[in-house]
Image 1 (cartoon, rainbow, N blue to C red):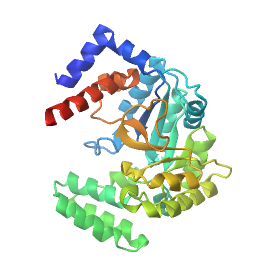
Image 2 (spheres, rainbow, N blue to C red):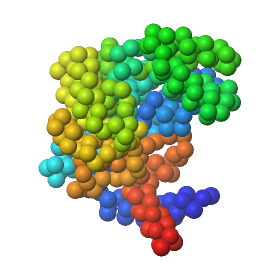
Image 3 (cartoon, rainbow, N blue to C red):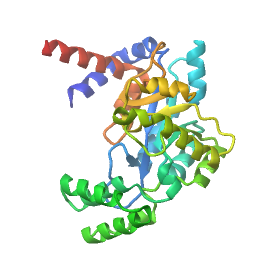
Image 4 (cartoon, rainbow, N blue to C red):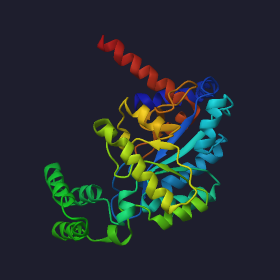
Length: 323
């Protein structure tokens, strides 16, 4: 048993988890997900794609925890008014993978849990699989090295749009990987019709840039990216209100705040782990990015707040040892 898990177990059996829950009651918890893995064979992507059963188990665990699960917009309004329910949780989903629509949404409906999807839209517009992620999957499945992956992705992304899918299929054939990933739309994003239906069924849809740019290195492209993202989503889902944002890949730049304010964005989430006490910058909200590497004990510790104290203790100890 690792030191981390031993510490979490001690916190649970000694009542420290209950104390942490009380001490952090005013802090908003935000869970982060991406897509679900449905292709036969070994699962790919620790946080990018988790198993269907794992996601269902997590949602059941969350429902059974008794924590109030809020819509993102409601949580942000409560933060501003100082009326946040104790230990409130928000569920967020990044990117808009096809499996969010086909597999995640039915699970959320089963447990009557609200969630927010941050939808990136270039691949939705072109209805084709996400090139760099497909190349990563194919080359890793074939046991190829990172250099080959980088070269192949750059080569295919440089092709005209209509030539990219044939190139991906040719790469898969060369590497000996079957096309179950394509038949199941594992690496596709939701279509405009999917987004509209998901919204009608209660899934909140928000901004994530059009081309999934790294804001840390391309911050001055952010206004146009938000405008393009918003234009696609407003056309797909008429009447939608778009005022929340997620940094693609977690890339953050301080200059982003003023661009987001100008675009009417009220909150923005990072990938960085943490909870959000009152006074947290609304453009730097932290989450727990759930994945196959996150076990039930860690998940529960995030909800209780004890993971916050353990992370703070580890950070403080590292600084002390480094001084």
